[in-house]
Length: 159
Image 1 (cartoon, rainbow, N blue to C red):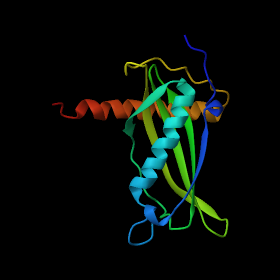
Image 2 (cartoon, rainbow, N blue to C red):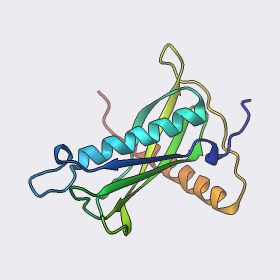
Image 3 (cartoon, rainbow, N blue to C red):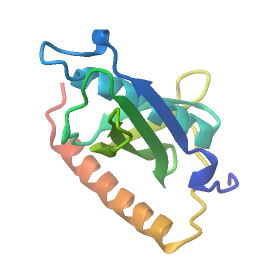
Image 4 (cartoon, helix red, strand yellow):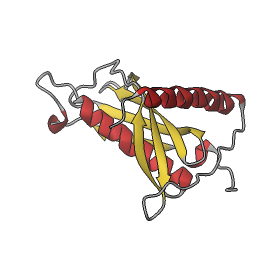
């Protein structure tokens, strides 16, 4: 069995500036751009935890709560919340930072990854080291989301 790792060991903080190429006709950041940044931060986080290449397998519901505008700063924080045998769930919090320094929540996303070996086959990931009630709560919520995700997956038509 692999040695457990604490979520703090793999946490990622990422900052982006919304430039003209990131915006739509209304001057707000494209949702796809934000999703790309979320995927990058979560991918780095999962790879740090697994110490392996990790591939994205699912995005849970993502709601764009607060628009992020041209010239604003996007702060992204990614943290592993659940680790299974070969998969990881990463919670990503996105905030927008205005020019006056104030900030507000924009998005939360839960992204699932699978660690893979050099042949692209799933490989085991270290368990999470849970050191406090908040970590345990996040893990329990992550486990429930995983079960719901798998249930939805099994209901999908397969080709």
